Structures are given as structure tokens and as C-alpha cells.
Image 1 (cartoon, rainbow over the protein chains, first blue to last red):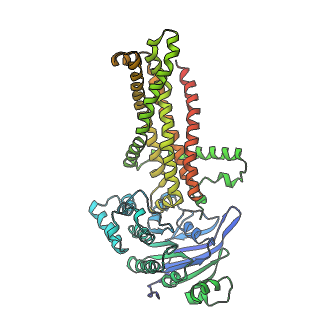
Image 2: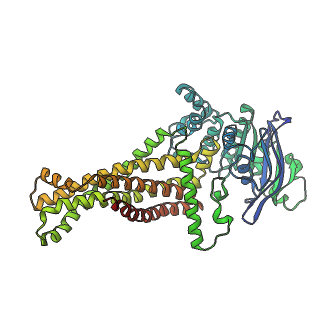
Image 3: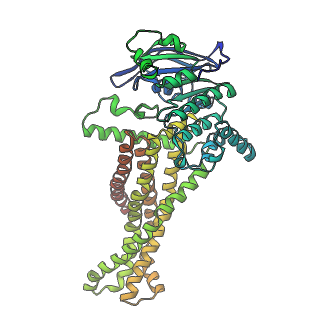
Length: 257
Length: 269
């Protein structure tokens, strides 16, 4: 279950967030977030439901606009770049959605081809087919290539969702609740896949979850998001070595009888 | 997470704290206006999604064809049947083909086609895009470097705008057949004579007005369906509302546009 040590380049920050604030109507979800994600690192963001974890990665990918603060991704300021540059930057970021967000009307093959065909127009049919087969092989689902998303299980959908982001060879992966709603065995498989992606594709990742098993097995560093701020950031043991009543229940629920 | 704060989301309603339905109505009107401007800004700038436009044209045609065939035929048949007694009281039965042609070409064909398409195509677009929005498929498209507005909205609006005139022409033809069947059963008139009488009162303006109407109706159905679906929120409930809103709003607007276009084109007669 314990994660293999990753090669992290602490001199290379791929995501730099400073003073990030975001409110929805009158409710302040994020109240001044500072965060650095280093090259090759898997950072897990933990927090209760509705604490703003998903909002954070939607802000990073430019799906939402922050009220205040700055987000630098791969040395580009998300809030200041043009729409064209943002689109090009997004190709370098993989986003795995909580709901998998597979295109219902397309087969698995078409789902995987879609970002490739639209962003790498020079590719031949053969190159596209090879890329599709490679990512399907990476997630271990080559047999599903002609199936429709509705015919897949929850775990398979998650894997195909991850494969679809991998097809563009992203430098950063953003996982939104990768193990939510899955059985324990599939959760373990998804956790292993996240680590495999880190090793094989040399990605840096932010993993949003409230599943401590996922956090422990995939995270190089854990950031605890409570009341709109990161209350504790560090290794798994460092974060949970506390008597803070807002943090302790997370650990107790998962690991104490 | 509610996607209502998506970058593309028009925020006016919440931003200004609009509470009552009247202000919400005007906020919607303002947002649709922005939506239409965005369509013109993106639809005619490369890269063009021609393949998707053709696919959508096919979808629009296929979705409506059966219903339009049946409805067009019945409209032609019933209209002829109902108009006969009135004309017969003046001894003007021979005018029946002319009356049918004017009614079908000037009003019934574009209107019936638009109403059928609002129900079949508009609701389908609203539900499809609504479902894509609430299941984050539109967000997924956006983060993978595709412009979802261009790919999903522009293609569908262009498809309805281009396809509706074709469908309206088809409805007119089927309506003509319906009218002919009724006339031939009662009066025993030949097909050639019927067609001759059918086209005799029609002028170029009738065809042009009908074409313009169909284009406007098609554009309206596409825009309304896409707007309702694209900004759908609140999960499956939102999808239902998007589909319903697409039909009701499009039908309402089609009638308003019919009145306006008739007023304008009649000035040229």
C-alpha cells in the first residue's frame, strides 16, 4: 500500500498559487490559498465535502475565475493569459473528472481520439490508432475499445477518463475524487494507476479526495483544506500527527477501530 | 460543485441579485443576446466544424422527417376538407387548390415544420447539451483544448438554420399531396390540373417569405435549444427544465416571429 519514492524536483515549481480567494454568492469557499506543486510530485488535497477542493482544481484549469490571488501553471498566469494561450496550456494539463465525463454518444475509441484529433491535426490514422492502443494498454482496458461508456463499470469509466487525459501526454494531472463511489478493490487499482501514471508519464499531480487510503497510497505530500485554507501541509504522518479536532476525525474514521 | 460559476456562464442574474420574474426575464433576454453575439463571433471564424455541421444537419432531418411527413400530409388533407364547404357556399370549389397553395406556402408549411422541429429537435438539443453540462462533458471538452461553444452550439444552430428551409419545402410538397388526395377523392381532378392550380396564385415573394421564415425559425430553434442546454444547472432536474424550456420558448418565439415577418412581407405585396 505504501507509495514508492518519486523523483521530485524541488527546484522546479509547476503550479504556484498565491492568495487565492473564491466565493459563490456570499459564501467564501477559498480564503487565501498558497500552494506550490513541484515537478514530479503527487500532492493530495484532503478536505470535507463542500470545502472547495474541486473548486481549487477548476480554478487551476481555468474553468472558474478566481476572485483574488494568482495561479501560475507551467510559468503562465492563468488569469492573465489570452484565451488562445489558455487553450494551449490546457493541453499540457490532464483533468480527470469525478464523474469521468466520458462523451456518452461516442465509443471508448472515439472518446480517446477526440482530444488527439482536435489538437494534433498532423497525425495519421495509424499514429492515432497507436496512441489510442497505448493509453488503453496503460490503463489495462484494451478490450473495451469499441464499447460505449454506458456499458462500462464505474472503475472502467474512471480508467478511460484517465486514459483520455493521458493521450495528450500532459505534464500535470488533476484528479477530482478518483476513487469516489468505487469498491475497495477498484480503489486500490485506481491508486496504483495514479502512481503508475506518475512514474511512466513523469507527471506532477494534484489529487482531490477525502479518501485517506487513496491519500496515503498516492500522495507524496498532503494538504489539508479546512475553512477555505490549507491548515496543515506535509507528509501523511506529519499532517495527522495532531490533536486538531478538525483533522483527527478523518484519520480515526479510516484507520481506528 | 455547481457549474453555474463557470467562466462561460452569464452571471447577470446572480451578480445583480435579480429576484422577481420580470427582471429574470430581462436578464435571460440579455443573456440570449450575448449568446447570439457569441454565435456570430465564433461560427464564421476558422477552424470550421464542417463535418459536425453535416452530421447535425442529418440528425435534425432524420429526427423530424417522419413526424413532418405525417403532419404535413394531414394538414394538407384536413385543410382542404375543412375549406371546401366555405368555398362551396359561393360555388367556388375550383378555387380550392389555390386556397390550399396560399395557405400552405405562405403560412402552414414553415409554421408546422417549425413547431414540429421545436418539439423534436429543440427539446433534443436542450436535453443533450443539458445532460452534457451536468455530467461535466462540456467542461471535459474545454479542458482538453476544444472550444465547446464552437463544437456544440455553432454546429447545431447552423444545422437547424440550414435544414429547416429544406424541411419546410418538403412539408409543402407533402401538404400538396394531402390536398390533392382530398380534392381528387371528392372532385376527381387530375394531378396535373391540381398542381397547375396550386402554383398559379403563388408569386416569387411567397417563396422568398417562406424561405426567410424557415431560416429565422430554424435559427431560433437552434439558439433557444442550445442556450437552454448549455447553461443548464441543478442536475437531472435541470436537464428536464432545459428540454422543456427549449420547446416552450422556441414555440412562443416562432409565433411572435411569424406575426412580425407576415407584417413586414405584406408591405411588399
